Length: 277
Image (cartoon, helix red, strand yellow):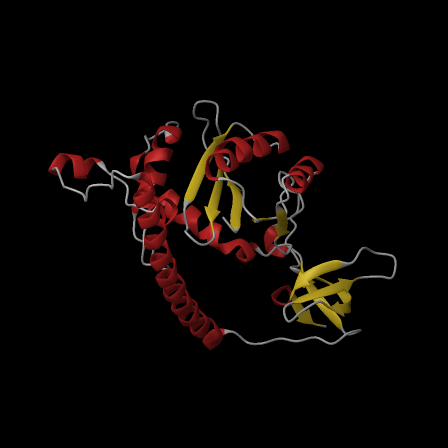
């Protein structure tokens, strides 16, 4: 796997001692792995990642996550450094930087909501079947199922066994099977890359049709969108923009380095979080 998206969702009603779900998504194949966790401590997340992801699917070249403390800590950073995995981080208060895995949460929560009990305390029992259903379904962005792109074959489901649907016999010679698998995956990956490129172009056109480009100059002043909530204060009277901040550096087309005062800590902010002062 070249890039792996990792996130944590929850808390959910306690089920078999678990209250969180760690989701991992392969960027290319869209193959999903969901691991129930008893807590979101750095140790629990690191152990689940090594045993349930890396130990089964292998390492990934890159790992992208949000700025949650379960991912941004000395243990997790040392683990990635030890395994030679490049750790990527999203921009502060910018969840759509990791939007691919965030969108999966919606797709996963929808079937779970239809099968859990009234108390919702049996969700762990339904997690694996729902993840399997997601991986077996044809993905819109790739035109193939994540299971097929990861394993090189479609999964056998209960309906196949019930209807006794026949499948092509596998080669009896190991080398022949390996050669056919490699050739088949080469053709599939080429089609996926072509289909995904067209999908990205359509998405870009839709986004560009409604977005308004913003740009700020160095040493200019801006307002910064600050989402923190304070206990004992009404959110209806909250000021969403704070500042002014001075633009210290333009990192790229969408990210800026801003600073409130000369002695304050600099902040990396996405352009959508800024307004002209």
